[in-house]
Amino acid sequence: MRLLRRAVEAVVVVFVVVTMATWDGLELNEVDEAPISVLRVEYQGGVEIKTLGQELTPTQVKDKPLKVSWDACDKSKLYTVILTDPDAPSRENPKFREWQHYVAINVQCCDISTGDVMSGYIGSGPPKGTGLHRYVWLVYEQPGQIPPPEDLPRLTATSSKGRANFSARTLRKKLGLERPMVATCYQAKWDSYVPTLYEQLKD
Image (tube, rainbow, N blue to C red; front, side, top):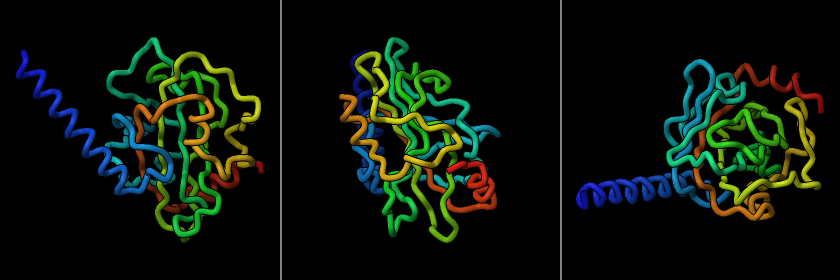
């Protein structure tokens, strides 16, 4: 039993080290600290984020994920879930860093359909010619129910106004939350779906 416990602890240590190394390699510390573990995200059509930094297309992530999940998810806890782009409008000139794609608080364990949605989901829409953008999913454990911040406006899934120059780190500190419990990142560049996404945005 003791040997099994040591083996599990060793795997966890290696997993965390690899995760942090990849997080640093993608320079995701620009968004927030490395997570304790990796988040799993599943989209329609069997599309999954399996590794940190894998490349997906705007077409593949145009709809809100079907499922988010992680190990050791505590059903007695509530969580804050964020999707943010630190590379707006481009990684070379991120003058709009970060651009929030989704923000929800009081989310139940692994159930993205729950919670108070502050920013409705907008898929990836990197401008043409700006190369790969990093899109970072972050999950923070809450100490309990959090009242929606009065100075954080609710944004619909068709509203682009008020999403630029967001900071996940600043928001989580304001909410009194610790480093990300779990997180992941995918990268995407312009594809033919992006103009359709822009047409859906009212402002």
